[in-house]
Image 1: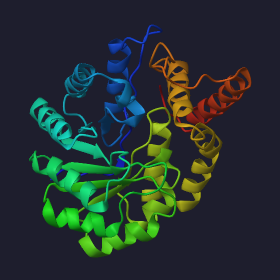
Image 2: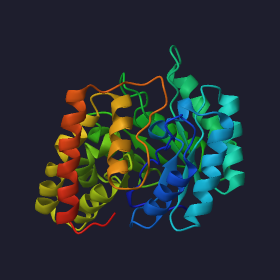
Image 3: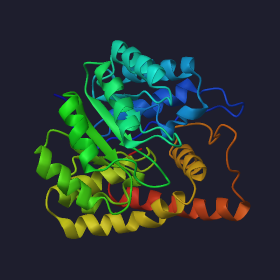
Image 4: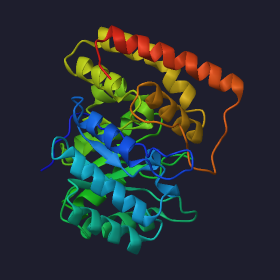
Length: 304
């Protein structure tokens, strides 16, 4: 059984200015994550721009991540597709490549009923033997509730993780915890915005972007040790950065990459088009926020 406790960042896809993948930078980010006392990594997910990648590019990224990681932390490969058949094929392929687990995000498919979504997830989980994580990422509102998680767990023994990103999720987390007694471990997403409340409710981890994953890892470990005052103080200093970047998802991708460029982990802040071009005032404010993040990182004795 795969055990996760801590921060599991989504690995971004670095691009050259011509939008081709910068594998040198990608490998550098993967190596940094694997060596930064984090709990794992996930790709190619929304934060990896999976929806702008070809199947070949996705395979190449997963293979490179598994190779560079070398077993130091778990690699969760996300098999996203609106086609259940094709998502199942991706899941089988990633498992065969050596991924420690596969993940699937609830498709943004208009008109799909709860039964349809349940069948989609069950089919994918049944296609593999490795642990499966289901991500409920739906900007229009949560797509799955506690009863969904319980039912999928009853149908699929390898459904071991669920990632929630919706506000007011704590009652759902508590209900799942009480009904399943840890059979399905819960992670929080959306940049870690709800992580402190989630930790007190029993989540096992956070799955944010990579840019401040080390700082969020520090927050998690401090909160996990029981020092809530220090955890809230550090987390509060990160909120201006988190809140600003999540005003728009394409802007989140750009801010992630601009921060990683500043840290010397990637070479270009290029986000594949179609995307959102920031104004000069946004660039100036983001640079101010990144300056603040770097000062916090120094104060916490964190390296690159």
